[in-house]
Image (tube, rainbow, N blue to C red; front, side, top):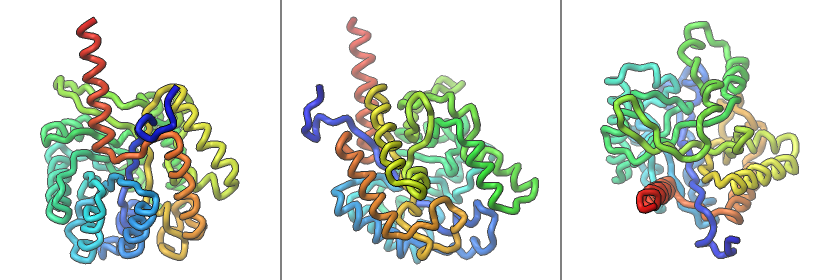
Length: 328
């Protein structure tokens, strides 16, 4: 039996995809994204304050274009100044990144990396594809650029349903729907492992994959945006579902990688242009309470850490397992 001390708890990684206002409306097919509207001046001070109150250090996956805009610079600098990590979330945040030629994919990742380093002074060691997109070309580029891990896989069967819901709230023409045909993944993603594992490429190279956590066995998502959506109908149901997911993770010894988004701390009064996003009819006060409650619940069962700390821990565990097997 594990002791109650924090050091004896299993680790859980906490990360936040720092999708900005312009990237949401671009993916949604709305006009005006070319002006790069931002809510960083609202969100980043707010989330840094909450994380400080919770005594948490997490990983922010940053979009490269945001790091090139002067109006965002001081807010992104605050992330590193507060002791948080940064990850690469592509340059243009296009969920159809996986359909591009390898050369263009490499340029996307390189450009984002350079921009992030220039602003934060920190080289990202991890990558998360926009819209959870993946491909062997993306993985191969990450390996060649020396990335420690990828964290793009969302191993759930519900991707097509999420995409259908999304399309229903847009007026996309056939061409735009085709471009977004892999948005939120496909049914095959539900067959992917829920535990961290090595991706084995045809070239023989391998890369650590840290999937975004879903409920083991059932493969149902429980990232915070999903929990917010459930909480709209019943907070008690949300609490039951969260604790059920945690219990399954503990029972199956599935390491936890928990995902956050900016809209998890923003209400309809903060960002009316993204009213199409689930749970945006909730106030910022209600979301903050749920945000704090969920992370507090996770902290009762896990030691919450950044993605780099988590990735190094997983790699040490796998190396130890191989060593033990070799000795036996």
